[in-house]
Length: 420
Image (spheres, rainbow, N blue to C red):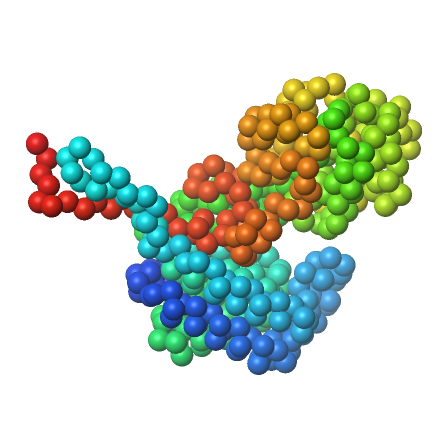
């Protein structure tokens, strides 16, 4: 007798919930040993993983998938090694579970503190990248959480092969294999049903395009960590150093254009627009970037095309950049507040007072001074791998690594202490 979608989802969720109780109690040494063992398994099974990925690639080509989407789907020996290295890196990170963050004594004599604990069961919904299966699985294991992985239909064979290897390592290590489960069917109805399982699933992390994230956030009964898009800004201040301004603008935009921490808007102070600004625009144009500018930008650089109102809030994810000339730091900050997505912003300035003001007043999840927006990343911030970037201030804000996959409970110690 076939199992209905609702029965399948209930089984997945209940098994994950039971596994979460067990994995939360596993000590760091056993978790780290399992992560290192999983890395070795991935490397030994490279040919098997590439074969499974080949089936996905063949099916994708038949469906007409080309270019960047096909590139994201592709596994190579180098990418398998990178997955294994990622698991070893997570094993080397400090374990946040059980960490006590401060203790204080109350007038009653009660000693009070806070302890980090796993969140429980995390549902991660992602699209075509098979490496996410290993990356997220490793992070959830280290942070003591169970994870339900729902990858894209186009990468089902690759994801299944990776997940089976990871589950095998968990079993071999005496850990609950159900702490990592791959949703076996790509049907959208299954996602909808999972988003209703608020009694078993504690957090949903959608990784993908804006339409996917908005749909998940709209339908879920469970808290969702989300960032809809990355409209990141570079602001060249009137006290910017010319070479630094050029290098940061180019690196923020061109180092890798298709990622969420790539710059999408350049703001230039009018006091340096005709000097530094014009030089930076020429450099960007020379790098193949299409510039969409305000009227004042086009006076400086006539080759720029007119910017539309929608360009200021657009995540281009290609070699396109919106450019605006502003008259003050206040105007730059107001532009970011109106059009930004709370992701990442940077100021280029030699005036540290203005840099600190920018940091204080701009409330995006990552705010930088004299550094490329491309540094807004869990690895670059020293968090190790990340499960995603949150632009919601609850429960986490910014790149979400191991600590972001935990919560805190209050703990208290008394000596027969009674409430008067």
